[in-house]
Image (cartoon, rainbow over all chains, first blue to last red; front, side):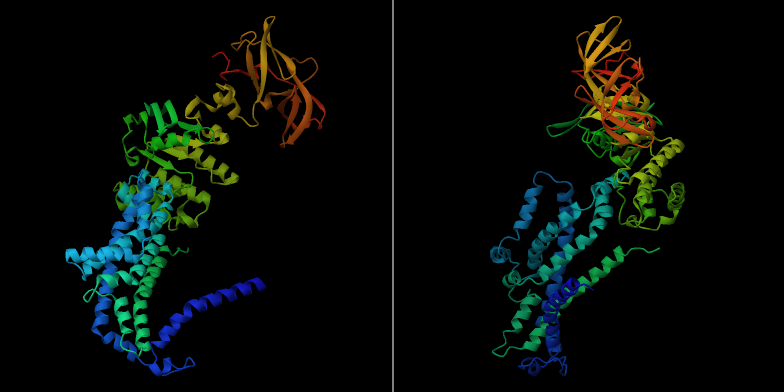
Length: 270
Length: 361
């Protein structure tokens, strides 16, 4: 092997280590007793305990938070897909003179600091009487998912060769069939990435959730953050366990998605 | 009955007019080629026939029915695209069957017809594969199969061979010609390649800047070009053009230009004494001159390109570069003086200002 390749692989391995090690360490710490966590010399060998995890799963607030997160993020992503994908397709394939403005507007939603969005929204939901409810969170998150999905899906749809869609028109299909049968499946690979990204974005969202919920509609990130506020003694093991719990759904989601991708795009070998 | 009629067809994108007042009628079973330089509007015209572009003005009818407002699927056409435009996520079988499924053809019949078409085009072994697993030539054959299976009234080909390498292009050209011989479906074929146009067409429609320059059989277009553009566009190597002044001399005419004076009978042409004209001679029509020949162009051989059977000799005459395609054994050495003659039957004369042919119809 050439020295250049060896160096490149070493750099890659180091970057991979930087990315993966904190996650691994967090997972390990979630299985440790506090004594093993706060030692001066980090311990790789220890007696594992499930106490942290069972403590987390045993708390009602965590279960409610998990439920709220799954429902709010799941619904918002679903709404984002149902509204965002057709909107993106329309902008990509049937642009009118506002198409550029629409794209810029959608992006501009992400320019604003989240606080600037969250405060007016909080007032609105308070006035309507939906403050601290899941529907308020779902609608608010839908704003995020629609804009992110649109922004990422427009180039994905533009990447579908126009002639392929035209061939379907010549084959007798209408605009809606072409969207369903041609544009969606051909662009699926990039679209699924867009959907997954929007899910991770709202799943990890903290500030808006904090401002729109006081007790009932708290999402998992809020609940997890509250775990660190139990007096002077920081419960590191519990915190790490809650981080693991928080990370699992996006990982599962991505795992399911990549499995789906592989099954759709697996090349048939004859 | 004509298969396709375009009357007073216009196409404009905003203020830019791409096609102007175009009239054309294509007969049933005919193979018509739209030929022209890029940007001449030939693909736009084809796409208007297909229904993929709006028609800005005029009327297009296919099979006696005005189709201006019909969707592509309702026009009885099938189209083959330059980049094949196969559905990348479907198998070859599904690609070919996609149009029939739309027409609610029963599954067993779809299966039968797809297999029949696949057999004709030699696609049997690939029916279960995806387009990306096929070579360019195979993909183009799938695109043709997808068009054939619908048994359309009209086939539309949009530069179908441009993405193939030279050898495959020749092969597919022959296949398309055979296919048309057996199916006899009216075909409109767009290309910028004059060899494809000459070999495939019953009639060539030569377009420039959205206007038809000439319609005719390949032999007519080659032998009797209607104007200087057609003459220059068709034929490889390109026709020589020499600007001449026309003068009367006895019963005939004298053409003076490029350092020589050429005497011709001029019977077949509309000539004006003192007028300016452009003399056109194709390089293969120039023959090595013997002593006593009339109508002689002479100069010094500047460049010799060896083609195999023939050689292209370029020589300067009165400051004008002229090329002659001569048999390789008559090829002169570089910088040798050369003399070439032509027969009057093989020359073309064009009006110097309008570019129109001066040949009497």
